[in-house]
Length: 532
Image (cartoon, rainbow, N blue to C red; front, side):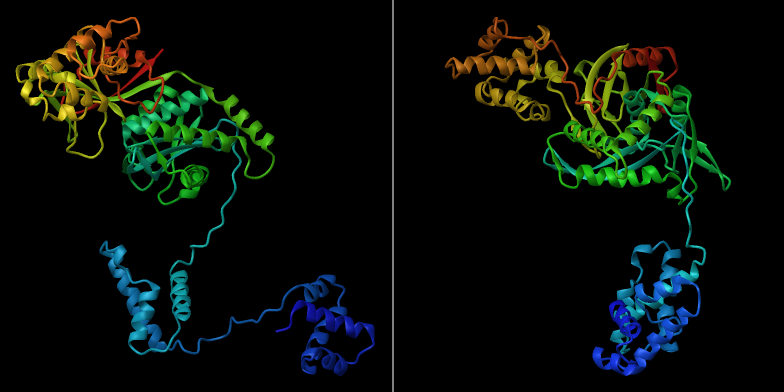
């Protein structure tokens, strides 16, 4: 086939008048029939007043018309054999065995094993054409939409796999994208449940200090409770609570219609790629979240296309047109549990300790997305970081001091000792392994006087820095009261919170709600109290 340059050369030599058609063929080393064909096309363009025909001849690469070409190797018998395997795939899809279908390469290998002389590309073309003919309306065109500032915001979930503290984990991205300004925000959660859904909305509205008029969701379980007929969907209690508190409307996309929320559909992939393609190792979840926040701020400052200042104007218009932020919503599940003989409550398959004086008593557990708070008579008993999976134990040594003082020999092999900070465990093993009761009395003394693990380890470090190798409880007690000591003033090892600045007022109001409403049922309740 001639190239565009060769066609231009033939036409140029012909128009110059220096060469005959035979001379052009001899000079270029091509057939005179080919020269005649090109010049016939050129002369046909001269007979019309359309300059576009000449431009097409001189600038567009010629192409063979292969539409009428029939396959030489693909006979009817081979096509029937391929159809048999395609029908087998359809049968397996109907039986729920989608992952056990034959691929195109498998069909070709089976045919080759039967001695059929056919190429893999021929099999691929035939199967692709069959699939297209089975879906005649699959080719769609999409209509670009215009959005008013502050009008719509889209939400979606995504998955990301990173290493946190040396442990490879699968986390979930809660992603928000405004439709007008394309402002993006995302949060990491250990679960894709109702509490994470509510907390992600609380974080987003708090951070932008506004509320879009319409939120757009797909058919996720945390948003859609049930389907009523082919079109109508019933929202969940959590979504109704969010809508009532923040005063926004919501709409759901059609099933398998991701383009109806195309902004956030691409944002999930875009944020995940920009944030976690290179950096995949973090010391804590909070560090990973801080990195994600920085990536989102950087993306909002840069426009993928066009002017950066124009994107900033669109984001500012979005934020300025939103409804006022009404304040935080308190979101947790409150449930009542009986403390078992291990002085723990078992919440969704995991055990969390409470003070050993509460064995056989009932306590209220407030379950957040990342932590648990135990409450009795409006008093906070304990705070635990929420555990993943099932069958795990979170035990705090301070909860077992009364029992261990009666049975000090059980301390060395206890799970509670294994879960204390490493420095505390090292102090016990080095200085108190032969006198566990003395160590327990030290812990009780520190607790009663407003000191805790960090104060004890700091005091021990100061004593060792002065040359004391063998420490006693009396020495550490005296050092706790030295002028150099700075009491931490806390008696609880607070669980790390993914959301900084959790308002105390939310928990106070929630506790009042617990005492004033009938929550002592077996079914969990989602509380939504506003922190003023």
